[in-house]
Image (cartoon, rainbow, N blue to C red; front, top):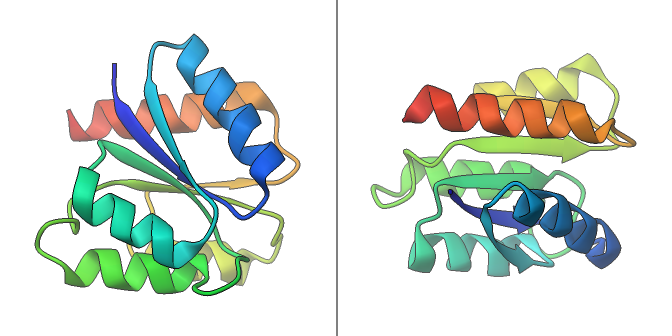
Length: 123
């Protein structure tokens, strides 16, 4: 069981991801914007973060940058879920430390496989 933080401004997407991850035995916390998500990550130090890029207040790139600069959070693996299809978006996310990138709309099995793979890699 892993502690996973989902940061996405689409609350329906957050809830759907939470249901799927909880069905796999994970403990899930939700956040609906980048700034609150970053604060939650600092406080809770989850095992993994599922992060959207396009969000109000602070986008996913900003969250990745701040997470990587903080000694308390720089080790937390992040899997990006985004509607951005440009290879530049994935390249930028990975250059900022993302360990996975899944395009929306996604196949649930692909998302689970990416998350589980990231968790195994850091175990």
